Image (cartoon, rainbow, N blue to C red):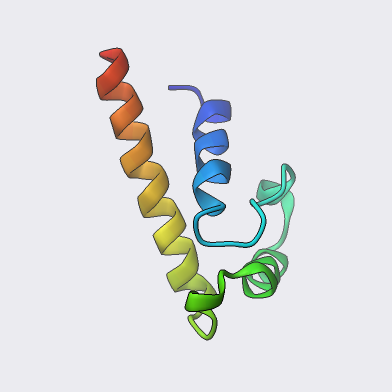
Length: 75
């Protein structure tokens, strides 16, 4: 699976934990900018969680989704 598709899956999954998906320029943002985005857009039930916990949830969801797609397509 190519990096662009992996990022699109990450963006998609971010919407499950944030009020808006991570932006297209996510990878060029500084860690501070990324953390600020996570804190400013976190889904209400996760308010107060550290950005690292929010990001871990997003990445875990993206990984599971990626594996599901790969299995579905026989990759």
